Image 1 (tube, rainbow, N blue to C red):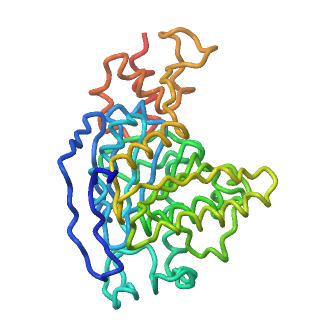
Image 2 (spheres, rainbow, N blue to C red):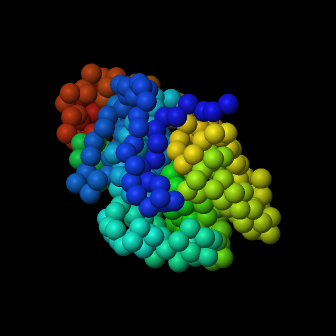
Image 3 (tube, helix red, strand yellow):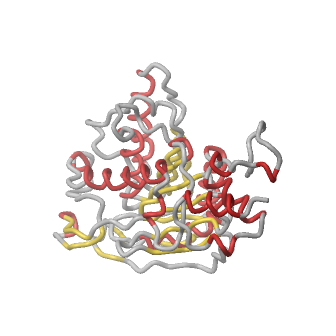
Length: 343
């Protein structure tokens, strides 16, 4: 049975020219989320209720596309995951050898479609640094720097972050998530998960799994009729990653899951997006909002100085102070607001 298409990807490498995206009648209402954009092309889709934010997905588009091309499918996913913040960066525009040197948004240069060509990937290291910077912003709580309108962002653990991507963006997500380490550390990222759509493993020969990322769950979705990145790329990527995991102590060789879709070309289907949503619900489930720890005092005795940003936001809304908190970017401002309005 041919899957219902949500949109067609913008790039067909097999014919070396750009196609227009086709969006087909899917409601992308996202009342639970707010959309903001940065000058560098990054799109952020954040929970309207900031206190709900307990996980982040960084989703990278494919070659020749931009973050805007993934807003609608991301909204579809966001409606099923109200606790997740979505960061959609846009790749730099640079010449792509395969496309005759034509400048286009690209995470790294692509020389050819054969397996040997994927070993070069000039520019991959720079793109990984950019994605790592976004990850570290979420961990440190400086995620407010990724958006012009969203105030304080709750600091997250690495296990509450997922890297995702389509085609070249999926390759970037897979390589970054499994090979890179935490800031000023030799420990792997240990992310909540990685989602690859119609992608592949770049630099397969040099690929090495960072210590601490052996158990990272991976979902690889791929159309069986993909004319750009053949579906065999999914099996080859899984084989390479799983073989290395099998050799590692504590590694889970079964953590790489592949799902294929009959009749689907180099695009994304509704069934696929639903599978992605189910995967995300499993690896980064919502965390119940609480305003205090089990041993904390009752409401009027809560100590704001010991609260997380998420708890502060919840308490502020509970006390009817949301309007007064608008525009406050620092945690200290939120703490002072509660202290000032305590009985």
